[in-house]
Image 1 (cartoon, rainbow, N blue to C red):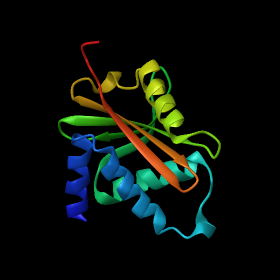
Image 2 (cartoon, rainbow, N blue to C red):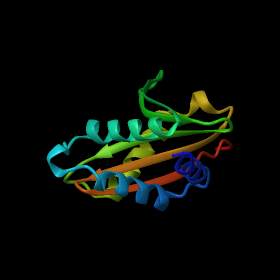
Image 3 (cartoon, helix red, strand yellow):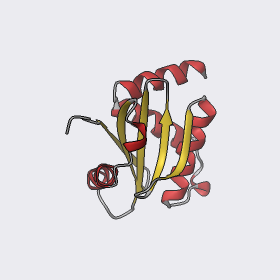
Image 4 (tube, rainbow, N blue to C red):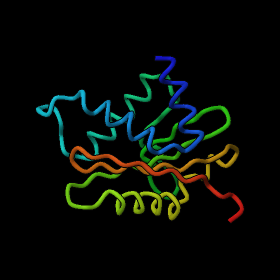
Length: 140
C-alpha cells in the first residue's frame, strides 16, 4: 500500500486527473453491483475511506463560514479541496464544472491559503467517473 500512497500523492501534486480516474475505476470495479447505491453519499464515503485507508490525512464534511466542503486532503505542502457530484441524468463534464464553480463561489479554499491549493472535482454517473483538477491562482 505505501506504493499506491506514494503514487497517488504524486498524482495529486501533478493534478493528474486520468490517473485518479483510473484508480477510482479499478476500486469501483471490485464492488459487486448488489452493494452499489446510486447516491452521492455512497461515492463520497468510498472516496474518503479509500484515501484514509491508504494513509492520507483526509477529512470529510468540513464546515466553513460559507458552506460545507465534501473533503479536504492535506499534505505538508499542499491541500486538495474536493467537491463530489453524483447524478444519473447530468453529464460528467457538467457536474465537474458545477463542482469547481461551487468551490470557487463559496471560497472553500480560504482556510488553506498557507499551502499550495489544488481544487478537485469528481463526478459519478452510474458506473462512470471523471475527475478534474485546477490549481488555485492566489493572485486573482
